Length: 343
Image 1 (cartoon, rainbow, N blue to C red):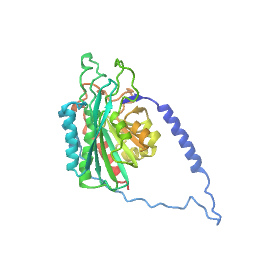
Image 2 (tube, rainbow, N blue to C red):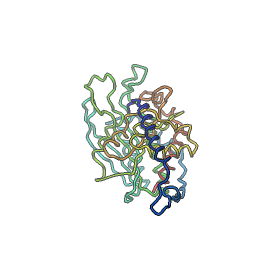
Image 3 (tube, helix red, strand yellow):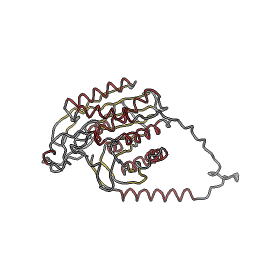
Image 4 (cartoon, rainbow, N blue to C red):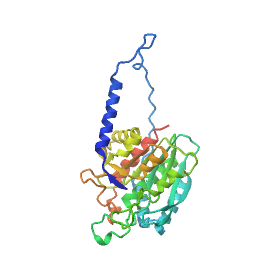
């Protein structure tokens, strides 16, 4: 994914929204013709809280390691094929209806690839749905590496890729034991990380990132598919991770952002889920929002102090050494708390 900071714009939008809300909320209640006052006496019964299953960080960590042990899951590799097979078979074992969506896409280097999105549906007959997503592919070069000889090597893609899948596989295992009230679709996107690097030597290609999610957004796995909202996970296993309220997420799905970040705070994860808007990133959620109108947010690790993603992003050092079970737990439990309390 690519980084473009637009926090000033986002903060401005939030300020305008807050001002409008304040004007509306501070106005006096209006009397009805019969002399009664509306807007001040209506009470809405609160929903009973649902306690979700416990998210097992050890299990999630093990799912991440399964992928890391396969090697880089770059398109066309044996590791890539093995990962698709493993995800599909495991999700079927957990009771999901699984579809592997194949589609031909062209990368910036004019190569054609068969993108393979793995889509698992739980409680598929339920019309009220939420989707959870991550990408599973690895970048085919480590262009951020500081060692010149490493730049052409395949990225391990452990935090950037495998961590999101590891969290979603553990959520799937829990759904198999206890269904939420809503239908859940788990989507593992392919070819997210084959975006055009700087100085590639090829003509500039627009929208070169997130090719698997772009394909899915234009070719839904079910005709007329829609979800109430979506939650994308990217780089969700790193040590000392911080998750800011990402700008594109706020713009398209601000209410979902508030729901997730407030849930995290209530669970005691406010040190990871920072109550502050910052940044705007090109990630799978951008194209899903633009092309499907399904409001979708991105939970993505960003280091504000360094103005960069985690320190081993698109480097050979993106390995299991940097995966923290505490981060996996915080993200997984927060997402489960949210989906189990939806109807």
